[in-house]
Image (cartoon, rainbow, N blue to C red; front, side):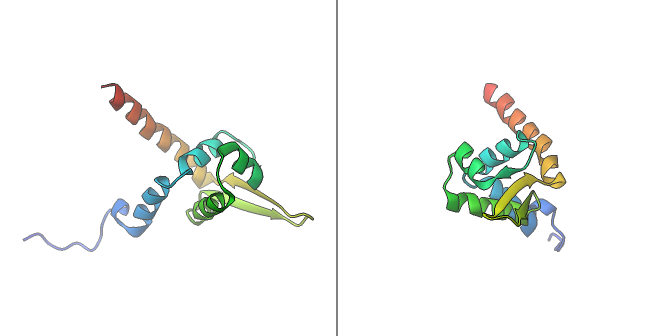
Length: 111
């Protein structure tokens, strides 16, 4: 009989699973691609127009990105209110990881 281990690798823990599930949600990869290639903060409507996403879905995904520590939301005290989003340093570190994963996908599709 195998010994019972309470400690699982991060990919099997809730935090890891939540992150992988987030990557599989609609528009997430499009949003990340846009943010990685846009080196300054972007406004909600600019992101919405560029990706072709509904306001509701965009709002949900941005909230999820913020919860994961990938995106920072800055609200400016202006009338009308200005809200901008940009990748955090943690979010920027995801770029090379995704490039590696998609490089692997491309290579294995050719084989």
